[in-house]
Image 1 (spheres, rainbow, N blue to C red):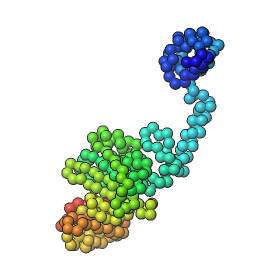
Image 2 (cartoon, helix red, strand yellow):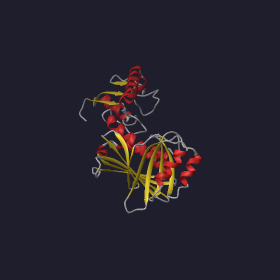
Image 3 (tube, rainbow, N blue to C red):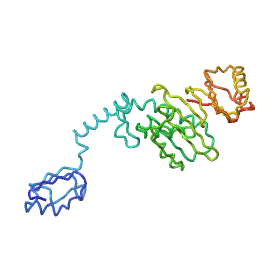
Image 4 (tube, rainbow, N blue to C red):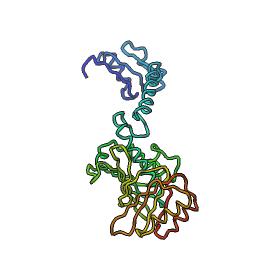
Length: 306
């Protein structure tokens, strides 16, 4: 270094050899030094203390009145930013969401939660892997919080206390592989999120999109097209594509006094399997569920809650 340099260390003690610094100060190589970290801490004694060319302060910068005031202000601003705008910054254990991203992500977070909750409820066997595809406009978003939301929602069926923060670690501890991909091409859709689950017995898939850029829709289950709005109480039915299912469901629910708010049925022509999503008002009793399961064409029946 040039003669007459000034050195400041506010990083870590030990980065500077203090005996060499003292020698450089005494012979004029170093014109001055400022330190708040030292080789030995707490620094009760040190040859640099009292040197006319050295400023020493305790390693307590964060504990000063000014620092505490600034930290308090920053914390209050960050909490307000989250509550007002949905922005998350400087979080240690979850992805950051900027104030600019927050309004863009809000409908996608709702869609992600719905897809994850539905998948978790229709999956009976142990999950081996989770794959999430962000398609079209969704591929250009900050997908980390969306991924965390999906994984948390999938696991909530078996673990009520799981959340966006703990979900990735819990999935890892259970040996569940998580993979994400982004693709600008969403086919016929402008934007979409596709969730794929691999289990011990069967692979499952749910695709969702946003209508008008804000309204979540389920548009495909296991490759079967079915356009449905998620409601608080629903029935998921996987069935043989044979006549009589709709009439049988309507008769049983009508006799039980359960009102059908919406009925969405999807099938692939030429295949013998179909799926249905039925929105209902209120709860459905266990005996009514048993009656529905006895319908000859029903393969799987689940009561869904959102």
